[in-house]
Length: 292
Image (spheres, rainbow, N blue to C red):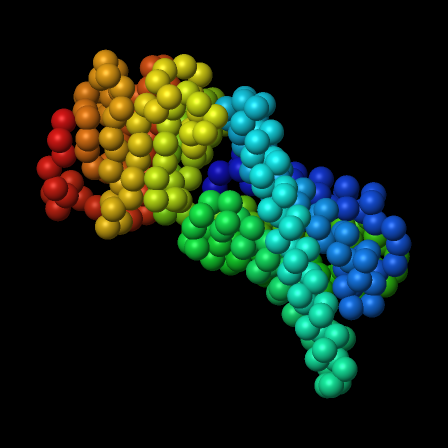
């Protein structure tokens, strides 16, 4: 379990819940049917802050790049805000049309609201990473978290006017479910051990993972070329290609230009060492020969 990532995401959820509680004008803050304006405002702020913090906090802690973190914050927050608010508007309109024709229990409407919110929030992460796989992974964690937390919020906390506890519970559960799903469903990743108790983890989720010295890279290094190496996925295998001219990059202390990564490979970049791991690891014996 990547506890650093877990605490980062849980902290993001708690902060998002706290800020959403502070700006909530009153009334039921999560009921878009009876309290549309308040519900839409709270939904947008909570989801926008959550997506922005989840994306930018790891950049600040692991890479210490404020400019990159700011760019991640702006793009993630805007997507989290707009997508979930649009989803809230569609849900409210659909619920109004359905309720005008059919009598449905309030608990059923609330269940579908939390389901809709989890789908919209998972869609935000899918859009940010450009991956349906990421969206499905996020949905697997967000759906049970929001439904369980939402049931407690509707039944106990909001009915007794414990609004702060309701927002904190929702934020904490959202972050916890999201982080656990990402850890349990991860496939390939890079680990960097920076201390006895601290480990930085970079998830290889997209079709391409770029490391270099610019803010546009997935892994931004302190110095070196703009693009040091690229890891691409092909047929379930990850292939790394070096872009440095002086061939200073090493894998298991050996120089390379292009090769297939195997679980446990050490990628050495100066004084930093990244360990490649994959749940889909295969034996070297059945892999094609790598070009070194």
